[in-house]
Image (cartoon, rainbow, N blue to C red; front, side, top):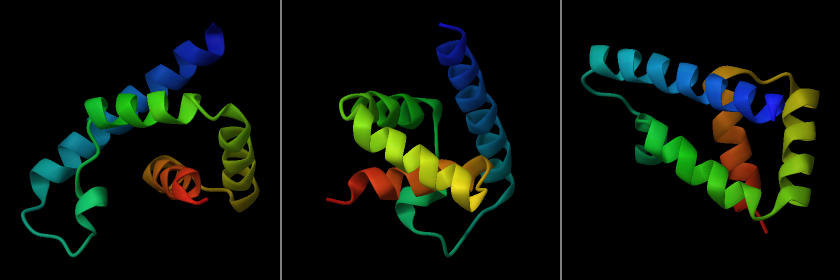
Length: 84
């Protein structure tokens, strides 16, 4: 239960930071899927990932090995979960 609460809190912090950062930029060359990461998008991604927990565990292990943090961590997990 504590882990879920910490994860949710982290997602909300990331979403808040992204909202602030996206409000400051007008145009970017980023991929459309990576331009705006909202709370709703994070919840949707987490629900989709929870359906395949073994793969999520592997992806999280890769993230930790690479030392990714913040937005890069979420985008890497999204890409990793999208692979077949």
